[in-house]
Image 1 (tube, one colour):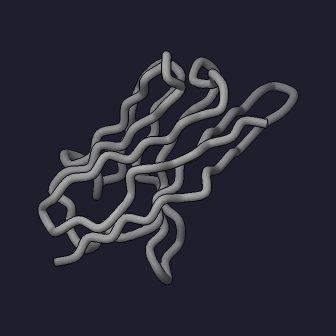
Image 2: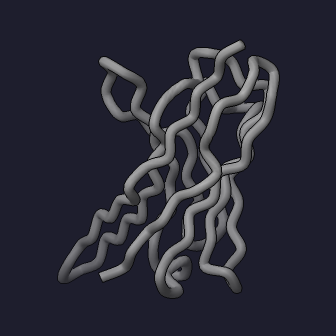
Length: 119
């Protein structure tokens, strides 16, 4: 079973930046779609950004122009660079790895890392 470990969350002032990291326990980027989701208090978990095995990226409207998802294949690590943060970005951010095969499918989650945007 693949393990995902997030890091990089914390407290940041409005307008600030953070970079989240998600380290996978083994090489999976060639077959898995990697994504960042977030869940704010009292709200449903929502997609923030994802990157496919081919390297294509998609973003939620709220993240476009401010967040960037990337990956380092050699380090088995996915990143989420977040700029111009505002209080509405406060949430627990989760890394996700999704595999859809012919015979099986996997949907894996990290433990989450908390991001708080506040002055």
